[in-house]
Amino acid sequence: MGIPQKAPAWIAPDEYLALEERASVKHEYLDGVIYAWQGYGPAAMAGGSRRHNEIVQNLVVALRPGLRGGPCRAYATDMRLHVKAKDAYFYPDLMITCAPGDLDGDGTRVAALSEPLVIMEVLSESTEAFDRGEKFDAYKLIPTLREYVLVPASGRCIEVYRRQADGAWTRQDYAGVPVDIRSVNCTLAPDAVFEDVS
Image (cartoon, rainbow, N blue to C red):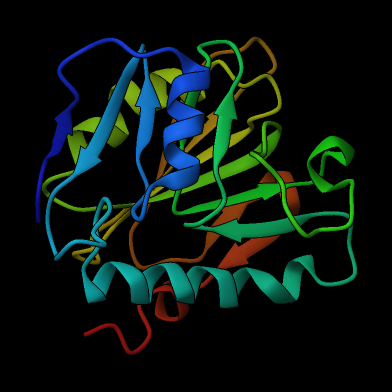
């Protein structure tokens, strides 16, 4: 796994977006800095391992039955998130949104989602500090966000951070028991999350 490498100079958000449109790999953007990820080959992004990808796929499959027919949709890895309060852009491993603004249009091209209820990140050694630190600090600025789920690629305890009515965040750990994603009324079975993970 690689570590995020910061670009050497500050860049404006519109410059980042223009560069990203032409880029062959994904980059994240925070505080005027483009984060390029080093790791598994030229198309690498954060946590680009086979195990990481398998867990993300399992999360999508596990959530689909609970979301089917309802107003919410899950999006994985390739959908960009815009944190408007920081003018930051990320590619979370998984987002769930029910916001009309995120779901409007013909579905062909959306620049970025901005009103997720749930964000999930699969942790790796190289990305864990960023996912827990700067990224989570930015995610907290999204008014609609209710739950932030951290799934360790190692299969340890799944953590769910929930925004309370007063705006404070609390943490609940799930070790080997079903994980409640309360904001969208879904449950993740640990066996399903890590099923067939190499």
